[in-house]
Amino acid sequence: MPNLPRFPTNCLASHAGIKIATLLDPVGRTPREMTRWDTSGSVSRIGIDPLGSVSDTYTEWTRAIYEEIGARNVTEQDWRGKIGGLQSTEMADFLAEGHIARLACNDDNDYPYVVPCWHEWDGEAFWVVPRKKSAWATYLERDPRCAITVDEDGALRKVIAQCKAEMIEGPNIGGQWVGVAERMSVRYLGPNGPSYLEPTLDKPRWLFRLEPIRLWTWQGVDWAKSYKEED
Image (tube, rainbow, N blue to C red; front, top):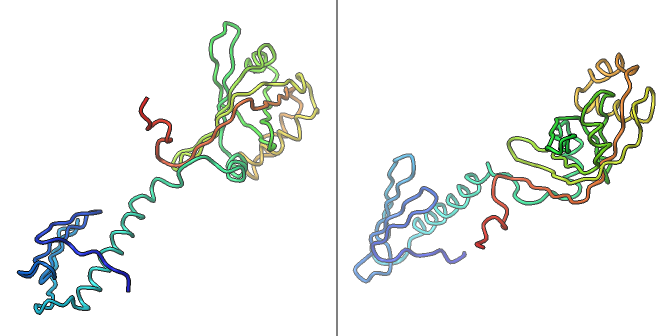
């Protein structure tokens, strides 16, 4: 049986919403009585062997308290989710879900321009398919410097990348963009994807490949360690 911690004479210990008070014998070694309050306001009292030996009841009760403390700590932190950067497989799985991206580029006046868009990640780069008249397509053609972020609510998974855009195709009908658009339509719209895409296949689109120059990820409800460090 592991050594369980003893509470000092006439102490009041509080942890994870559990408060424990002990009344020790005159020698100050063995608890005679223990009273417990929890966050619900309930009170329970347990008697201890008055002859000075720690009873089995006390041992088991103390063990239960510490197990409850540990379980409550885990439960109270579950809402934070997994904390830290995404592993490569986690990032790939996340980007394979139907999360809208936000693409940032520079407009003709060199002002930041941000647009929500569908994307496809192939393991090395992002792919986007602007319509022929999408202003941001001409911005990417003129200035390939851009950035993209994909994120979510809840667990707060996110992928952020600064990229260099490469125009693979100018506006055309039936080019390489069709395969990319077909896969994206299913990922974002499910079985309704083809019904949305097919009637517009006669409308020209561009195809851009966004190669990450710098990429970082995060998940969980907490600050990264670097934000907590003092300057």
